Figure 1 (cartoon, rainbow, N blue to C red):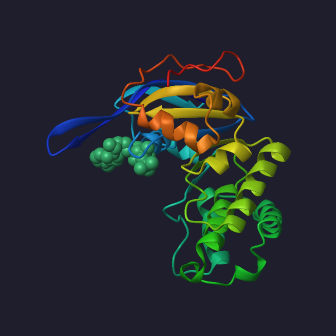
Figure 2 (cartoon, helix red, strand yellow; figure 1 turned 90 degrees about the vertical axis):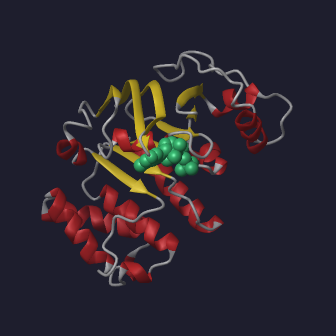
Length: 267
Ligand SMILES: Nc1ncnc2c1ncn2[C@@H]1O[C@H](COP(=O)(O)OP(=O)(O)OP(=O)(O)O)[C@@H](O)[C@H]1O
C-alpha cells in the first residue's frame, strides 16, 4: 500500500544543500499499522510530506495506493487521509459542521455517503455537541477529533498521521488511540503515524520504523525494538538509549515486508 524506493529529500538553506532524508526504502502492506519514530529533526515529517505529495522527493520515488504522490497528488488525495497534529486542516472561523461540508465539496463526496460517514464518525468520536462550534473555540482534543473526522469523510484506504496525540491529555489520547485501533481492525484502513509518544507505539503499532539522521535505522516489532537494548525497564529507556547512541549507529538495510526478518539495528 505504501512503498518507498531510495527516497531522499534535500533542502537548500542559505545556499547550502542540507540532506533531510536519504535512501529510504520500505514497504507497508494493506491493513498494517506502522509507527514511525525518530529524534527531533530525523526526517519523519519530511518523509510523511513526500508520501502525501506535499513535498517532491529530490531522489528516489514513492508509491502510495499505487500512485506517485509527487505526480498524482489530486488522485492520491481521494485515496488517503492526512492529519497533522500540529496544524489543523479545518477552517478556523467556521463551525465544525461547515468545515466538514467544505471537505465534502473538495473531495466531491456523494451527499448520502457523506451523511452516513459523518454520522458514524460524529458518534464514535463524540463530536455531536461541537458541530456548531467554530473551530477556534474547540479544545485541542476536540479539534484533533475534528481533524481525524475530516481526514476520514471520504473513506480513504490509507491514513497518515503526523503526531496525532501531541498535546493531548491522557483521556483524549486514549480516545484517539482507541478510535485508530478500531479503524484499523474493523475497516482494514492502513495506518502510518509518526509520534514521540511511545504509548502510541506500544498500544497501537505492530511494526515500528525508526528514522535517524534521515535514514531507516530499524524496522521491526515493538518486542524486537525492546530486545535491541536488553535490561532496560521501559520502552522509553530503550528508545532514549538508541537516540543517544544514534550518532554511532550505522544505517542498515530495511525489511520490505512485515514479520519477515529479524530487526536490523545496532544500538
Ligand atoms: N522547509 C525546510 N527547509 C529547510 N530545512 C528543513 C525544512 N523542513 C525540514 N527541514 C530540515 O530537515 C530535517 C528533518 O526535518 P523533519 O521535520 O522531517 O524532522 P522530524 O523527524 O519530523 O522532526 P520532529 O520530530 O522535530 O518533528 C531537519 O534538519 C529540518 O531542519
